[in-house]
Image (cartoon, rainbow, N blue to C red; front, side):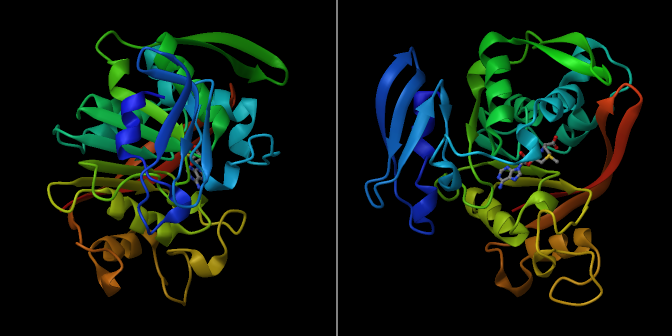
Length: 313
Ligand SMILES: C[S@@+](CC[C@H](N)C(=O)[O-])C[C@H]1O[C@@H](n2cnc3c(N)ncnc32)[C@H](O)[C@@H]1O
């Protein structure tokens, strides 16, 4: 982790109190902290930095704990590397989803946040529009691959062809992409380890329907964004499922209850400040759809209509 990122970190376990963390470096290479601990002076939590990866997810303080998330599986990691970067190795079957989402964002100064960044493509897109971009994800495997690509500017991986057959692929970052403007850390999008109002832009792509507490995530994104002069990009296919979220916490997809009707309308109303959930409220600039593709193997793709909202305040 780049040491200067510490300036905007707080203890996620102490929220809503904002406790700054102190960095105890054990091993470093230039500004890169290879190993160390981020410490909270209030609750005495220690957040480890191991192999350059900072883990600020309070649920994952014990790094040896078994995790059952599908987002840690190597096949899923490979599938996301394809979705995020296949255009860079000339695969014509990929959609242009990430550049399309990036078109919604106006270039500005300041910091940008990509919540649920997976293997990090949209974080790179944000880094090309802002001074610095941070991607957070709860998957250690995703963050490890994103950081490897960041540090080495190249990543070799095996892509599933069929059954046990694999093909080698190499991702190389275009020269114009500046790795010094990007960082990835492990964190929970429902308890962001960042000071309030420090981001000029916050993005949440295809994440809200994968969270136990979607409303808490929207509130956290709003807390992290600047009170004025901020942009927000939200996108989701609204594949509500009890595998991720109890039905009473869905923000749409139900006939009755607090968020009856469609997710996109409900998220818009929440961002616009309905019931004072979000303060200050956002103004919706644009709504639209982006076709996004996931590749399971050579003959099996998922085509996903992700509905976006671009907002400012
Ligand atoms: C459907 S993927 C979307 C990834 C990426 N935003 C994109 O559009 O390609 C959902 C992502 O959310 C991450 N995720 C799930 N729960 C999370 C949480 N509580 N905090 C942060 N990330 C989470 C997963 O690891 C995964 O990378």
